[in-house]
Image (cartoon, rainbow, N blue to C red; front, side, top):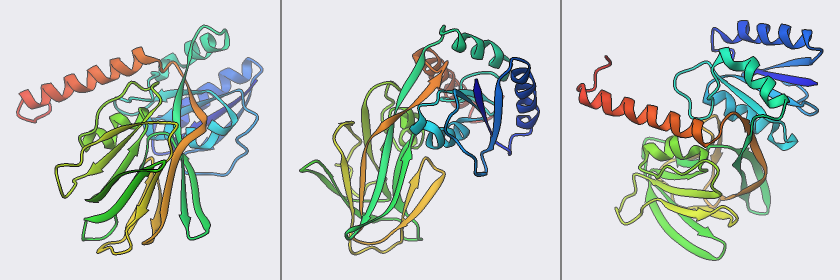
Length: 283
């Protein structure tokens, strides 16, 4: 068996845990390879399973890196409460063994393929697991965007931007911008305006199979930026067309079923209520 270890080098415990996993898997006759979250180039195909060692951000990087190969990811949480990274580091061997024996389900999560068209040319393409965000990059925050789904015009937006979020990403930036939380295995996309100029525009939940097209207005007071999963950015120009569609690939997450998702959701909501009750101070 070939195993890939994707390591967030910013997490102090990641290197030691990677060494522990590698030594244990070597004794089992597995072949292991390392990949750093800082983007070190490696061959990412041909692996039977991958561990992500970090937090939710590491899982997002892992999904963009290996989803095209169908490689399942065991997401170890070395950060704070994670919605995606749900496996405690001490449980890695138990989860790996149960997955290998076929005793654990693999949650298949919707991903987005995001493409930027400039005239007749495609100038940017990237998948994303959480979201694609079009936002202002300058001091003047309000930008102008038009959105369609297939041939239906959704709206002309004057806002700080637009978020196109998957159900997995519904608990991230979209939620902070007032969007709904969606069960992570539903096939849908949230289109959520950021601080719209008029209160008439609200988040919309759209069928995942219908592509979304977002046109960048020709007159802007600010630069415009596309951000994928909060990690990869691409500057946009007036007149650019951003096409967002359901990816043919899924992020395959081990031990990340609905039970783990709702447990994390309840813990986070309970923490928010406790903080508010205490006047916003940590106990």
